[in-house]
Each structure stands twice: as C-alpha cells, then as structure tokens.
Image 1 (tube, helix red, strand yellow):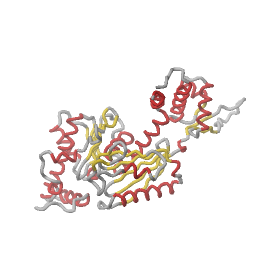
Image 2 (cartoon, rainbow, N blue to C red):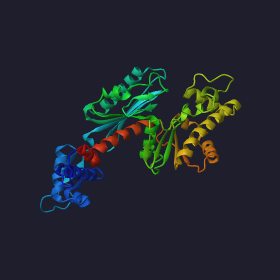
Image 3 (tube, rainbow, N blue to C red):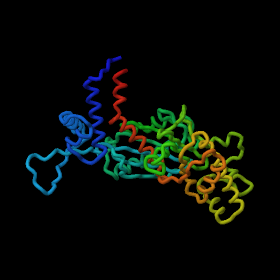
Length: 386
C-alpha cells in the first residue's frame, strides 16, 4: 500500500483541478482573479491549473468583453468550460421503440432519435435498430463517435452491474442477454446499463416532476409495472438490482392475470398490448359497463402495487409514468385509493417527461459517470491507496 500524505503534490493538483473545473462549469466565463476569489486558491495556483485544463481541452480562453470604455493596461484573461469537449448518449430499449438522446458535457440536449420496433423482434434486431438510431443522430448533429465520453442505457428487466440482464420478460431473448457487452462493441467509452424504471426515476428527479423531492417512487405503469425509487436523493437498486419489480406482486396470491383483468368478454384479452388496453379505457369513458369494470380492476391492481412501495418506503412523492399515465381516469382514483391503504398518503403526480423519461435518465447516468471522473477526488485517493 502506497503512503499518502496531505502534502502529496499529485493529489493536491488533482484536488485543485477539480475545484477550479467545478467553478468554471457552474457558471459563465470568468477571470483568473474571480476563480481565485471563489475557490480560495492563490492566483498563481489558479493560473497553473487553468493552463493545464486548457491544454487538456476542457477549458478555453475567450476574448475579453468590450465594455465601451477603453481601459489602460492588458485586459483580464477570460475562461469558460468547454461543454463541447465531449458528448454523452442516453439510450432507451423498449418493447415497442428504441430511442437515443445526445447531449454535451453540461447535459444540454442536442438532439434525439427514435425508431419503432415490434414486440416480437429478437434481441439482435432490436439492438440493430438502436445502433441505426444512434448513427442517424450522430450524423444529424455533426458529432463524431470518438467524442462520446459515456453512454447510459435504460432497459427493462433486472440488470446486473456489468450490464447483463439477469431477468427480462418484456422482450424476446432478453433474459441472460449480455447487453452491456454487446453495446460496448459499438463505442470506445464506458457503457452503463440501468433498469428502465430506475432511469426514469433519475430523470424525473433531474428535470421532471420530482426536481424538488429526494424521496420519490417513480412507477413505470404498464401491463407489468415496474418502479424506481430514490431515497434521500440516491437511487435504491436493492442488493441484487431487483428493487421495484412490483409487476411480480400478482404472484403473491392474486391469481388473476392481466389478460383476464382487462378483458371485457368471458375470454382473456388478446393481443394484450397498449393499443388493446387503450381501447378498453376508451369504451369505459363512453359508458360501457364491462369496460368500466375492467378499468376499475386495472386501477385497483395498480393501486395495490404502488401501495406496497409506499408502505415500505414512505416517499414524499409518487410519479406515474409509462403509457398508462396517458390514460384518462388513472390519477384521481389512484390518489383516492392510496388515501385508504397508506398510513401517510404521498403526493401523486404524472410524469412531466413522458416517453422521454427513460432516455433522459440514461443520459443522466452517463453524465454522473463523467462528472465523477472530472470532479471526484475520492476516486483518486482510493486508487492511490490500493
């Protein structure tokens, strides 16, 4: 184990670099004097760090502003963070579509692309469609693939740390798929795979309905709902990555399958997909008694699923997303039922991000990874101690 001391010059440079870069990234262009004032570092130290960051391509010197009055002497040097120095991708893989979202190092979204896929498509076809969407997006935005610093991916299923889908029943050939490994062949940067509901929870906390809440449950409501949870602002995956798989609750003594639950006849509903369920809900709104009963059963099941998480986690907020969030009549009954079942009913809101939630959350996962590389001194300390 190597010895690490408070005077270690390499560590001090890394700390100073992270502090200065964080200051530059958090605001508009600024001067060396202002950076020194904000960081508390000496001006010579700041000048040396900024010169290194300029050499590394993360910071650029800009022209001084012309304030109208000519001042004597040399104008102050101005610098800004180069958000364009690298790019990030957020990818979504779902039963009916694949999508890609491109951003710069500030998380500013530069473009999106999506392609429809069939629920019956094999894994190879689905991944090929995703690669096509990425290629189109990069070409349209004029971004080279080598500029990518990290790629985040949102996928249904229980996802292991290396990006393997341990269990995924939503799409053919998904269980056991080494998704991270497959996608890393297309990129020369880290690829991070996350459960889709977890990614959507992260997105709503970043840019959506949960921006002001740190204890949140996001429900990706569909035929087999999943959920992502933030506790104290941190994503809760569980020991094995299976936290929030509320779609399996019907196995605990509730024998009615979704096909029977949503049927308006004496036979199970086939095909069981979003379009068929939307038709059932439309009939219910027009007063069809059997459709209304099916809709009530669907909402009751969703309520039971959500209530289980609410009772376990006591979140401040529940955000409803997924395709079911767009169906009229879901939100108010859900609120009313949670008042009955829960010891303290949370606020319940619809997703602001809609179908963009999963890709946006995957993008945030990629951005978190890059920020950890740029700003986290702890990783440097740990590496030096090993």
